[in-house]
Amino acid sequence: MADTPVRVLLVDDHQVVRRGLRTFLEVQDDIEVVGEAGDGAHGVELAEELRPDVILMDVKMPGMDGVDALRRLHELANPARVLIVTSFTEQRTVVPALRAGAAGYLYKDVDPDALAAAIRSVHAGHVLLQPEVAGALLAQDTGSGRGGSTLTEREREVLGLIADGRANREIARALVLSEKTVKTHVSNILMKLDLADRTQAALWAVRHGVTRTG
Image: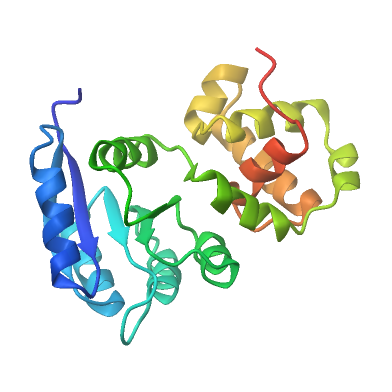
């Protein structure tokens, strides 16, 4: 385990849910709950003030909801990884949250140990989606199968590593490239496949069989 605990911010409009999440997480030696917010606007404010590593955020909240909060965090270039924890499963709820930059999507009935594992996973840079959630986003996939044929071999290697949850620095190390070159490859991949972000790229890779070969 890392010496420094993963710092978590809870954003949910139900106090009982926040209390339950805090109870689950406070028994974890490597996770620290640093704050709570009851709506998206306060969540964004605390995220800027506290700079947590991971934010557990509901989607449906009064005032600024989870999707708008995600967009605002993106505008502010806040580095926190956002894990959506909600009871809503409809595509019209799931897909916008993922497109707005969520690093994962779980339901509120998730097992406590699984929740803690999910926090560690997204903190490590992975994209975490329950199978039916991945299916919802894949159903809305804007990239075509033909788009993959325009990728160079190197871009396919980079895409496979994105699907494996690797950050640009890790991809650069694995492929013996500069981080700047990797960033250029990632930008080209997103442009060629008409995708908005790394989450969509990872799911596109899984759907079209572009995975690591080594």
